[in-house]
Image (cartoon, rainbow, N blue to C red):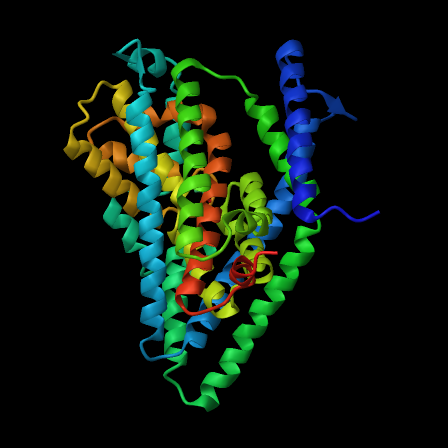
Length: 435
Ligand code: ASP
């Protein structure tokens, strides 16, 4: 019998985990306690297995980002090439993120989930805001405004940045490192290049090995989440969640495919199939950074983008390019503003769009990272940040969805930038020669 492709295995694991998680959720609701095996709760077993898998992926992030950006930048060489590739990449990142935000903005304005029968839903929602939980999540991340986010780009101590997982700082350091390698004599540059290139290849091999365990790890992660949150919906919040999902779907199935077809010259559904594995991994882990190794592998192997482009564009994208996150930030801030009955003038909406765009760049690719950014937006438009408490109900599920779109955005941009840099990817060749 032919072995099922890994992305199918992961998809099946997600579905089974959804079933197992909801059985546990219902059991707990009926019996007031978790089902156990040998006295150990099933949820903690799922959580344990999922966490081992997630940790294994996270374990390689720092060396992977360092090595791939250094090799990527050094490989592009000095001259104007780096500027050209960087320019195209950032342009596409900004354009797609803005497009995503606009879709979210339009849908939230059209549906108005923050109003119930034309009245702001404040009282209805504020009732169950778990304030302490929000404060605990936001606290300790230490970001109070947009400028602070960018201050982290130049870390005073790069080792500390690595320890704390501050990717923007590592990326900036790695770009400089790679660039100045090209300024050295070959005698010094060559061994460095070989060293970092080897580190990169070792990380990719490790990824392949870790991904063999993906179906089990993904099952654990998703089952634990569903067992915890269930599928229970609650009034305006459920409408909000549906609107966000719909906007994410429009971005994933309309905006990005149009760009892929007309600017990237590939068939969008083929690209989506090629990137199914990273998208599903992103969905299960809710972390673009943890998914990065899987993303690089799929974009190089399945789409056929060169290592030169992917090793620069993708690690940058995992932190900087977050289409789904930006869309969510904007939608969430608008929803809360609606619920508070804030007058949504053009000025207010414009500020929300701009801050969502900027903060999505600085948001780390880890679960729930956008909550901090939403707090920044709320503070900027004069709403109490405690209001994000209401978002926690659906945060994990929506986080899984938006992270998947973040990664799909990275894959699409890499495919398009490869074409604009004169590369012929496998998918582009296939699109030119329909069978
Ligand atoms: N979890 C998201 C990511 O890793 C970030 C967020 O929106 O919270 O891409």
